[in-house]
Image (cartoon, rainbow, N blue to C red):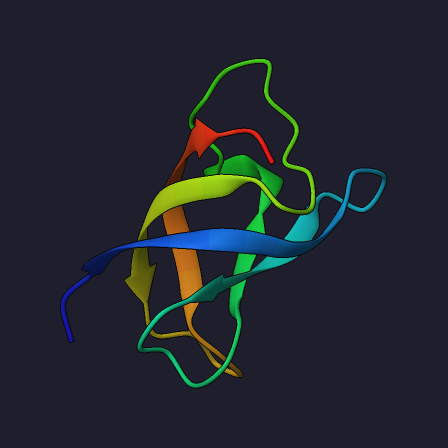
Length: 73
């Protein structure tokens, strides 16, 4: 499966641990995102932020790559 482009809203993000979860329309589960995949420099994701991302299959759940902040929540 190729990467699927999507937009979503941050449901959970732990700054100290460097990961979180994003809810996207049309995806049954939340999408895992790691801090290393956030492209907007100097940005820390926060609950409620709207982001654009590429979704790829992961071992346990879909994974977000190339995550870019669209609108701070």
